[in-house]
Amino acid sequence: MFSASPEFDVVGEAASGPEAVALTLELDPDVVLMDLRMPGGGGVQAITELVTRGARSHVLVLTTYDTDADTVPAIEAGATGYLLKDALRDDLFAGVRAAAEGRAVLSPVVASRLMNRMRTPTVPQTLSAREREVLALVAKGTSNRAIAQELFVSEATVKTHLAHVFAKLEVKDRAAAVAAAYDRGILG
Image (cartoon, rainbow, N blue to C red):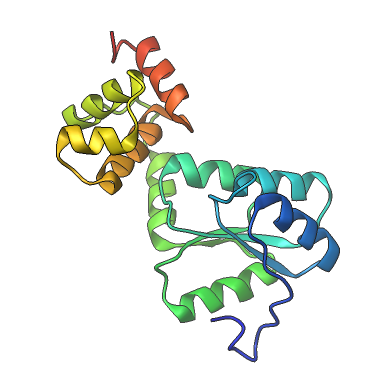
């Protein structure tokens, strides 16, 4: 999409976090579009490394993940903005232009969620019955596929439940979710 526009020069493309860091340091682009989930380390890790190594490029996260557990670490790591992949073409282009100028860019969904987070006192959110059920199966070491089969839902639904669990427990992975659930008396 960006290659087809005369307004933008695509100078590189990376398939992993370490490759993105190396290319950014080598090519010094104005803006880096960064996904959060990549082989060899995620986007947050890559953003952190770019900031640590003094890259002048502005990092604009472009992803499908919109939970607080995803957005907050990316912004804290130094991302200039955070857009979702379902954004309209014109919004993506406007976001890249704004990021190139160093202006903050947030998708409306993410901006709304962050505003609500700032206005609401931090109170642990209650897990739904289904989220507790999924978490209990995770604690037993059950895979997403096996959880989906046991609960008669799709694997994507299991992943959505886990994303909600991670956000509510303010954790980043399955092990941390299980540990937090035991600490808070949700499990056991």
